[in-house]
Image (cartoon, rainbow, N blue to C red; front, side):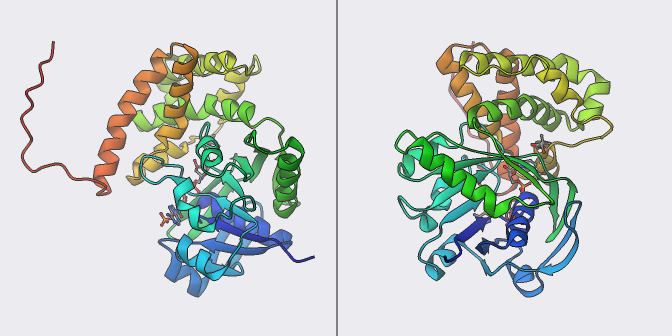
Amino acid sequence: MSKPNILLIGTGGVGTIVAYGIHYVGKSNLSVVVRRDYQKVSKDGWQIDSCDYGQIKGWKPDNIYPTVEAAAEAQPVFDYVIITTKNLPDVTKVEELAAPVITPEKTTVILMQNGFDIGRPFIAKYPKNVCISGVSHIGSHNHGGAIKQTQKDKSLISYFVNPNLSTEYQEAKTKEFISLYSNENNNCTYFADAKWYRYRKLVYNATLNTVAALTGVDTGRLDLSGGLAALSIPAMREVISVAKADGVELPEDVINSVVHSDDGDWFSPSMLVDVRKGNPIELEVILGNLLVVAKELGVVTPTLTILYELLKVVQYRLKEGKGYFTVPEKRPISDKFYK
Ligand SMILES: NC(=O)C1=CN([C@@H]2O[C@H](COP(=O)(O)OP(=O)(O)OC[C@H]3O[C@@H](n4cnc5c(N)ncnc54)[C@H](OP(=O)(O)O)[C@@H]3O)[C@@H](O)[C@H]2O)C=CC1
Ligand SMILES: CC(C)(CO)C(=O)C(=O)O
């Protein structure tokens, strides 16, 4: 039987380690799309310093493409497309980005990204394709083409329920993907309920990432300063309430286990890292989508709402800094009446 064709888009901290794990298993033809580092890695490969795989020098997958369009031109069909970019629908919609390499009714898409309800736009655009959810607990960052992985690659793989496809088919595709990626150095397991697990992850991401990004401190300093108790824990209770109204019961000790997950570490969550780098943050998928569901279900979320509105202003600053838009040199006069 021929090997399946896999394309991975976005070789950052997470994507490069996922790609290397798939290469290590060796059961597929692996291609990747690399943006900024294309010239460098197509010549020299990747330098990887990994707590799972050790020191790897000059690693290359089967094919490296500079764009999604170039991958589509080179290969007619991909069996799997893994997306490991940041999920930033207010900058680039990932379902549009991947469109050239998705064959309807054929390609299975894997969203190995943070965020909530991120399968919804994919299933709307590709109603007959399986969409897999990958929730990663890795700690891995890209420093100018050199990858440093400090926390082990642990991922929970499920499927976003697509009502147009049978449960058996979606489950089989998800397990097939796991068999192409899971190996003795990583910890990649099947988890039946994507929605449950994504709510569970939000208890951390919507409350610690957000407050750390706003205040500029890591989760240890957030605790010592009192910000954890005053802001993040009330926000966690709101996430749990939305989940409950949505039919998802999180464990009683979820707040305690989330808070203690960084014990002993001055840990900077990904949203804080992005703010420090001047990159846009995954605000819409981590908080915006949750607030849409909270509103639909009539759950009040005062802390999360304030965090969201403040972070929208931060996002504005970050996007302007990246040149996504410019403001007029002279501030326009508004005739709006405020009271
Ligand atoms: N890093 C971590 O430890 C963890 C991350 N996550 C989640 O995993 C996901 C990936 O995060 P992470 O690896 O840190 O992100 P990074 O910012 O390190 O990497 C994202 C990569 O995607 C590339 N990319 C973005 N847009 C495109 C495009 N249009 N075409 C090709 N490549 C593109 C970027 O390229 P370029 O270099 O050109 O910008 C970059 O290499 C996120 O959802 C994050 O929240 C979850 C748990 C932990
Ligand atoms: C919870 C954590 C730290 C998992 O790796 C994460 O998702 C993040 O930093 O955004």
